[in-house]
Image 1 (tube, rainbow, N blue to C red):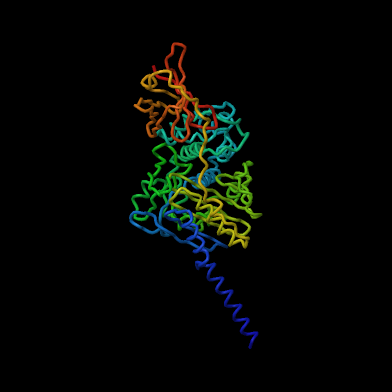
Image 2: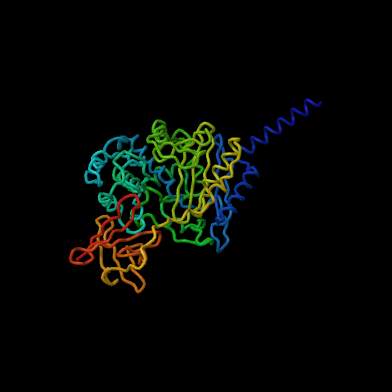
Length: 482
């Protein structure tokens, strides 16, 4: 009798575990998410966990709109930022399967007008180079926040952006190379990147709650608003409209946790969705195979060692992980999976903090049976402030402020207009304005730590201004229009 009772109890435990794995929501996972959400002070987050092809957790926590107190649901659309890059890589893989694209064929053979600042990069760069961040270009991200451009015009202007390293010499994360790759994909398919993602990924995967524009998200009845922490308070911020600046293939997708779990299952599988082979198994392996060594992320337990195609590949506490994060004004996202353990996680948040990464690693510890690390405490720290050298006391500008005013031109950025104010200067781009206060001599300090230097000619007239729009290279020279 006693043995029968033990057998029944064992069977009950097995059935209970199986039920949880097939869609139950373990209470301890909910508690972990709630605690992290509170610790970070974020309005909301949506979390999804898959194991052995089954959804273990899929739920929204907190609110998507603080003013109206609207809850995050399974269907709430979040901006996923650079998680989009894996979608762009997937489209490229489809075109490789179709024979329209070769990973290692120079881009110039597809787009003869394509140019980069470095001559060797111009002639040799391939889509593989673009998607593994080895073009030699640093971010140059200020361009995509300051100047609205059509996508082709943006790709053309990349020729005037200075590299910081030789071609293929180092891993340097770069959004603009993904823009160029996405533009090329559209050109090869006779379409646009946005239409390709919709037709070839969203539709066959049944991702009906996903789109490529925050303007589309705002037309629905369930979307998250973006928030940032400023001076200790959580404030709503403006949506970043990618297409306004010609970008998109680097980060424009918006999605729900329900849809992202479908996408995660597709990436963890062999390239099939709903019985249809969207990407060959060979090209799925290519995307998830190390391509180029990357620098350590500074977290000993989470060592990203290489770049795949649209993915980062590394080790988390001796467990192989394939992952990517995303961040854009007011949003943060993380997606990743452990292939050997068939475990995948997604976290989407409507505030720009490390909450998604902290949550994913915290849940991974528990689901992998590892000794827990307090990732919330480890990652919930303010960014260090940038320190500038002390200014020389008692100096003043060489000319009246009105003499610095005018239009200054750079071939990539176009015109930056400088206006004189009673208390300083304003640098005005079409979509961004930087207020300057006097620092010393003819150097002015801008918000965010910029030091802007004016240069005069031998006649004593201001002829150019040096703007540090990209910290990895020399300040860009904007020549004054005569």
